[in-house]
Each structure stands twice: as structure tokens, then as C-alpha cells.
Figure (cartoon, rainbow, N blue to C red):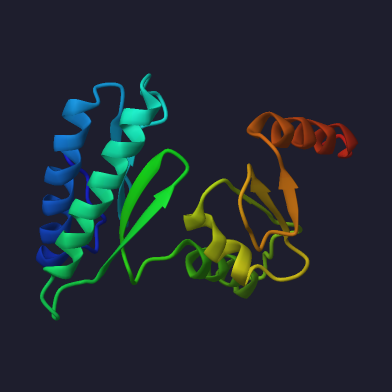
Length: 176
């Protein structure tokens, strides 16, 4: 069964179907890869592929194929964004971005009188940058891994972020 965002209409399903078909072709030739379905995007993960050189070449071809798909979108269709990230190719609807969504969630929570006491935003991918861009100065933003970023802090690897989170937990007062 394929789960699609509840508000998605036939137009969104059209780009999803075409994207899914293209990604499935690449996933078949790279059996250690997989496709992740998110509410507003499809992501082809190839991190587990043994032959990374072939996987990177396939990712280039996938991004090119998907880019042609985005150019073929009629003007009245949702426009899509193709992002090459860390061992992923993500296709998302241009109207959906992590940053504005995160900001809206935090603002809505505050509007109902229950603001978050603190917020940690961590990410390892280009698609996470929009969250770092819109995060207020009191948010703790962490880029995981190499590459340029607008995050205030950097963890060299996921294990470094985990170690930091364990340190934070150790410093937290015990719940009563």
C-alpha cells in the first residue's frame, strides 16, 4: 500500500507516480538501495550500496532523469525540487519545505500557550538547511557532517551528536 499525504490531490499524485517509477528503476539496479515515502517527498537512499562509485554515477543519472521530469511539468502542476544530499536523491513539492513547516509548528504551539522551552534542530542534508535558515537565535541548530551550513554548531558525525545528546540528558534535572 502506498500512503500519500491526506491533502494530496490528483496533481500531486501525478508527480509522485512519475517520480516513484523513475526511482524504482534505479532501486532495481542498485538492490541495496531503497525508496522512502514522506508526506511531501520521495527519497532514494543509496547509503547501503556496496559499490559507492557506481551508486554515485547512478545518483547523477537519477537526478538528471528526475530533472527532465520536473521540466516536463505543466505550469498548473505542482513544481518539484530535486535535491542531491548525503547518499540520497530527494524529490519534493516546491511548496513544501522543512523550515517553514518547523517554524509553523513552533509558532502554533506557542499560540496555544504551550511554547517549547527549547528546540534542537539537527540535520545532515541540504534539505535541512531551510530549518537552520528560519530558526530563531535561541534554537540550537546543528549540522551533522561536512559541508557548508547555516547551523550555529557542527557535529562531525552522528556519533558525536549522540554523545552530545547523552551529555545534555545527564545534565537535565531528574523528573519527579
